[in-house]
Length: 209
Image 1 (cartoon, rainbow, N blue to C red):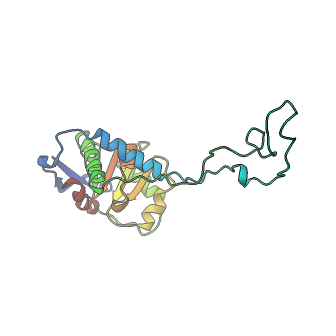
Image 2 (cartoon, rainbow, N blue to C red):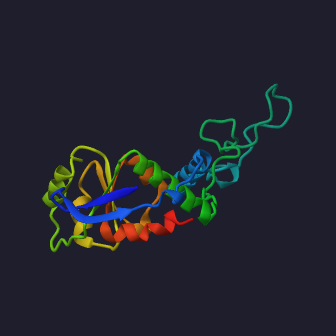
Image 3 (cartoon, rainbow, N blue to C red):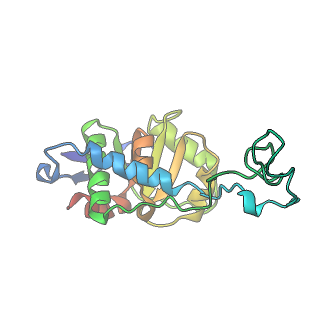
């Protein structure tokens, strides 16, 4: 498979990137994708939920009525869970939702998703460029030239670029990631992927499993 590199005006250049067909998988990894997406979404949870149990509430500890002889059930104090405003029985406590997934499995999932995008012709490669000042209009024009305006697009760059980040953070259907931040959820959530020329060389570490 061969992809030509585009310039920032959306025109083809003389440069190209070749992908050896031997690196592609011959089977599906849908279950691995499920595990990775589940791990990613779980990691986004704050886990700060908390409800007070009976012993954590402030209030009177006076026994509401005597134990026997009233015809009613035993109730204890006002903090009893059976009352409105009482303590919660086995309520949620702060916890972490992190789950572990092997690094190799994560790389396999990234590779599989990128391969599917390649097969669907939803991967573009643009030559390296510099942005000296933050300018959102530059990103809008770039997407227009690439015919991706109003389409959900993910751009992967090889090096951190603060001006590029500031230029793109206010766009609705666009996300910018450094190659080291690449996650499977973003790869799935954005139909189109734009690789910079310097990032595509680093992406081979995912494609050489």
